[in-house]
Image 1 (cartoon, rainbow, N blue to C red):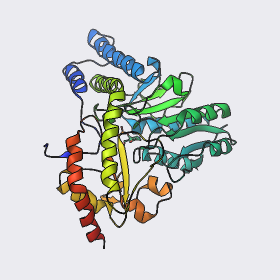
Image 2: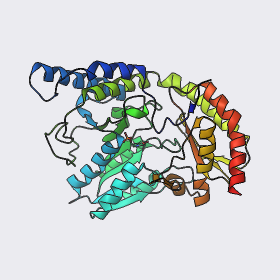
Image 3: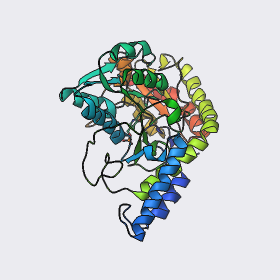
Image 4: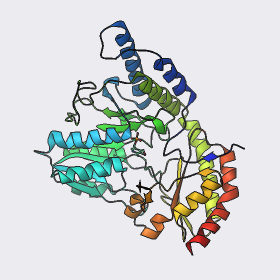
Length: 381
Ligand code: PLP
């Protein structure tokens, strides 16, 4: 048995071999992709080949790929860039209430700058109501952001329908696809979206690189300034090693998606069976479509932090899935938005699976979870 079981892939996933080898090839080379000499041209070639690979993995045109430092920057770039470009005529920005902080905090920052920033509510399963969007779009709107798959619950939203409604109202549509890539069929062109955020390290690529896939003709305003790289929207020297690692990992993740969905789905079902055998538990988002990679469970009469540490001591890495500021855990905003009480939100844990997860990891969880919950309940009482 391995020493530890890593069940926190939604936080970050181990590097896959293809990404490592693509990066190692590039790390020893010199060249700025903006330079005109041979070394620069070689770096440019690497960057453009990676752009083509990523584009073909996610169903977009290579010119629609804008490299960023990760999903966070891509989310910031879309929302702020859309509002800055359009707020004189379209001051509204809409995002769902279960977005990643990269969207929610950007949305709040825009409100502080005078945007009509509206949150789109979810029901108790974590799904938005598409009829409610039509009402929100009656006011001229710069952009709408809806997460494709939720990072805490795995709940899948109807992003193509959102894109269609947004287009009809003249608003740009954006999905945070960070947790969707590799777990759901992601085809940018077919989705009808104007923009899509991606991150390499959630699919076995390196930390520190991502992309905003941006439909041609969507005129975002830049949010940072410099040498004008990436269609003038994301200045900064391009990183050949990082983008080629990202493209390699995304290609593997997309090629293995269907078989992985079956494999991980079975492992996820096993986790849910263990959970069903423990009294006072509830799987969040049960009954609606979720990715096979995430299980989020509320344990009654448990502080999730206690359970996390007990599992940690037993060799299992899981996550509360919620924000942790200066070492103090906050109840999950996502679960609160789904109508859970503060106590329920504070008693919830996320197990997330990925390419390195095996049945041995689930065997370990089966062996330790019931006892860990019982001990966490004793500590709670
Ligand atoms: N969006 C979602 C849904 C995420 O899960 C994450 C990662 O936690 C991000 C955005 C941020 O991505 P990155 O870590 O690449 O900045």
